[in-house]
Structures are given as structure tokens and as C-alpha cells.
Amino acid sequence: MPSYHLESGADPAREDVVSSGLVAYNDRHSAMLRQRLTPEHRQSTPVESYVLSEAGEVVGGCTGRAVPLWGWLEIDLMWLRDDLRGQGWGARLLADVEAQAAALGCTRAKLSTWEFQARPFYERHGYAVYAEEHNYPPGHTNYLMRKDLKPR
Figure (spheres, rainbow, N blue to C red):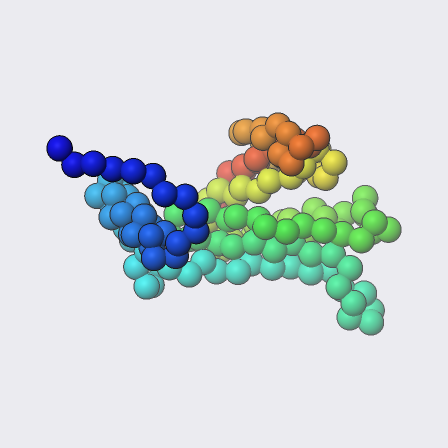
């Protein structure tokens, strides 16, 4: 009978073996995962929208990635300078990024936001919480949210 043991510590070569093993396992169980790893589908498409001042200064923005193969928009960043909040700029940024993703074939969007950020804003724009990560980081709650997008 074979004998095994544990070893701790970072090792890029061993990590590559584990990563390759996971990819092979996933390939056997999901054609969609297999297709996502092909060269033509490996890259996601950036979707971005910015609010600029008259001087060209970035005063807000929303960025994400469209993964048309899976039909998902993943929103990464959303920020507006404090003095511009409540004036509709956030709604315009979000709608623009969603429209870009929908034009690429995305039918769903997801994002995360902490309790001190913009959960009510996203809920007003159709996002719903599907999971909560309490004490992540300690003292805070991270909300994972999603929304169905209107097809273009």
C-alpha cells in the first residue's frame, strides 16, 4: 500500500501540478469550462465607463469584464467622487457598462459590495443579494449580488 505525507510551503512547480489536475478534472465534467479555456475564449472583454470633468479629470467610473461565452458581466470597480453622488451619474455608469455587456451577449451580471458601500444603490437598479460573507474582512459584511440583464 502506498505511503503519503503532507508538506507545507509555497512551491510553484507543485502548484502547477495541482492546477493542471483541477483543469483536467473540470474538463471531464463541463464542456463549458473546457471551451472557456480555449485560446479564442480565454480572454474576457473589458467594459468600462467613466465620468470626466471639463478638464478631463476622471471623477467616477465603472469597470468590469464581459464573458460572453458564459453570458456574464463581472463588475469589478464602481466609484464616484463624493460631490457627484445622488445626481444620477452612478445609474448612468452602471447602465452603460451593462449595455456594453448585453451587446456582447451577456444576460447576467454579478458584483460584490460591502455594507458601507452601495448595496441599496444596486438593489434600486435590480440587483439582488445571493450570498453574504460575514466578517469578511473582520467587522464587515460583503454582499454578493446578481442581476438578469435585458437582451440587446
